[in-house]
Length: 101
Length: 155
Image 1 (spheres, rainbow over the protein chains, first blue to last red):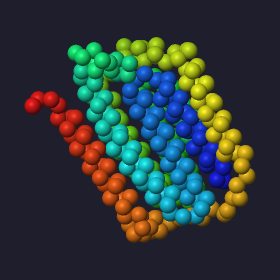
Image 2 (cartoon, rainbow over the protein chains, first blue to last red):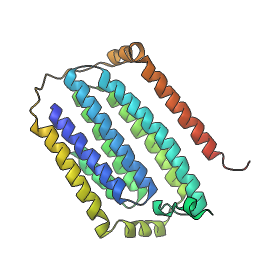
Image 3 (cartoon, rainbow over the protein chains, first blue to last red):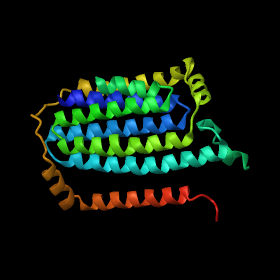
């Protein structure tokens, strides 16, 4: 697989994740789209590391993996807490700060 | 190709569990891509961490949310029709620009080289030790935040 093929695949996956992030209202799917975008960024790091023949790409991929794990843990806990508060998964319902309730 | 199709299915799905299964297939396809690119270490991490840990975390949360058929129907009503028009339009513009950047510039493609896991480990724990420390700090912060948020407000 060539460098441009891998970069194109990363681009397509990033765009799919971005479309899902913008279009979905269910927060589970929003988090899944974010994971998909991070995964595409990791693929681009791997592809660049392959293209230059160094290990830096894989090191950066490990960092992206760390970031994804930490972000997902906090995001899912916030999702559970919000579900307990407003009884829905709709991201548009999170206006409790504005209503000062 | 498999990764693209399964990612589309995962994003456009209605049932979260089915979407998660599509996402697992997508991640496994990505692991194969990593292996083909010569990054065996990253492929193993992709299978273990993403397809193992992260998807199981998603699955636990979906189980704790106790979704029923009414939730699926409401979900289906959220993602129908013109909701997709504006996001897909934005994404097509952005993706077109980025794709033009990628494919218009003829880069001199060197022969790719398989990078062994031992090489990655040596580089990571000798030269990039600061990045490792930062990653550990990030994980600690995530752990503390998750614990604090999960403990609730019974203080």
